[in-house]
Length: 269
Image (cartoon, rainbow, N blue to C red; front, side, top):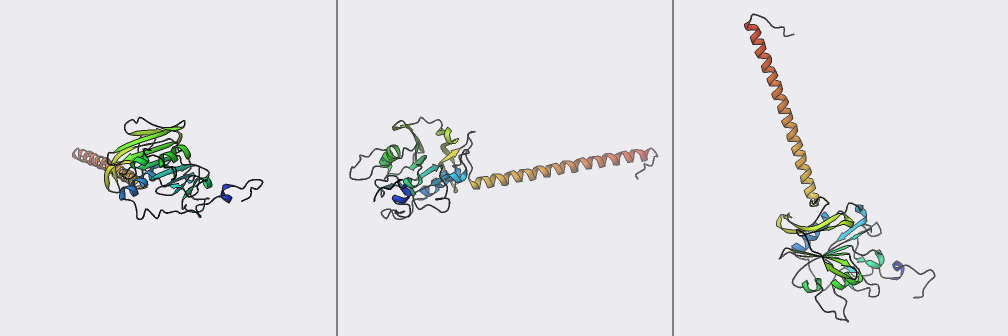
């Protein structure tokens, strides 16, 4: 293709998400339940207060195309978030894949859920075959320069966070299995609780006060509980007022009885 003046944009010269495969034919079937539920919890609780909701894109198990020189190369993170892009592609439709050279914004945080088959690649412990695409670690660290890369091992309840420092990832020392990200005013940590009726350690986001960000179901439950408490307070208030009226009535009846005992007929008008 001939170069134009001015040069055409990547959207006009490179493949878009409509041109690229959105599925991996070598990975048929759905992930296990944990790989379905955990990303859902991450997405539900990822609400950076300093970004409008329509400028936040989160997704799990979607093709992430990262190299315009090799447009068919992709990775498929268990979960990742991008900030500063529309939640819908071009503000109008759901994405088939995330194509970096079309979106012009790289992921801000990536989470991988360790499994026996992917552990070494997730941790950057595999050797690169120059005839094959780079591994996840190299893509996130060297090509996409993702600022934060989290790894969670549900079998060990182990959470590890890597932060891009200079050219390389450096593992962060976690406090109480939590890590605060000041740029987005959110933290990521391990929460022991019940999600989708399953009690176990989960990875989820928390706010500046250390409180776990609520899911929509939890918010509805909390709202219903507050309404129940308010109704109970109103009932107690009515009971107290009723008791007060009864006490006033009894006091009045005693006074009337005392007056009558003295031969005085009270004026009850």
